[in-house]
Image (cartoon, rainbow, N blue to C red; front, top):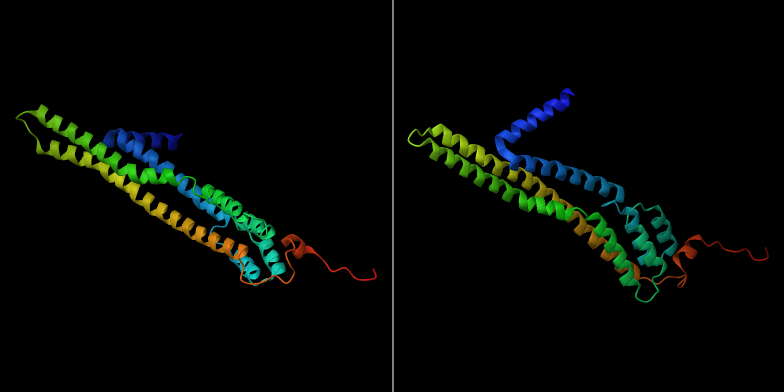
Length: 229
C-alpha cells in the first residue's frame, strides 16, 4: 500500500508539473519499454542471429553431402530450420521457391510485429512534446497578460521552463525508441539476407548429389540392407 501511495503521489506531481501531455508520454514510454523487452525475448527464443548449424547444413547441401546436411539441420534451433527443411525435401518440386520464400516471409512478419508501434512512437513523441510546449506557452502568456502592469519575470520564466519540459520528455522517449528500432530492423535485414542466400544455395546447389534425387528424409535415415538377410 505504501508503494502504491508513493506512486500515486509521484504521478500526481508529474501531472501537476507537466500536465496531461507528460503523463501520456510517460505511459507511452512504459508501453514502449514493454514492447522492446518482448522483442528481445522473442528474438532469443527464435534464435535470431544463431544459425551456425543452419549455415553448416546449407554448406553441406551445396557440396552434395545430403546426409550431413540433414543431420545438421536436425540440430538447428533456428526459426528458419522448418523452411529450409521444406526447401531441401522438395527442391525438385516445380515452383517450390515461391512457397519457401512465402514461408520465410511469414516468419519475418512475425518477428517484425511491433515495429510499426515503435516507429510511430519515435515519430509522434517529439510532436506530442512540442504540442505540450505550445499549450504551456499559451498558458504562460495568458498568465502574463492577466498580471497586467504587475509583471513578474519569474512568473514568465517558470511558465516557459515548465512548457519546455514536455518537449524534453518527448525527445527523451523518441530518441532511445528510434535507436532500438534501427537495431531491430538491422537484425532483420541480416536475417533476410541469410535466408535468401540459404534458399538460393539449396534450390540451385553448385554440387551434384551422389545419391540422386531421393528426398532428404530418406537419405538421412535410410540404412543399407544386408544381402541374404
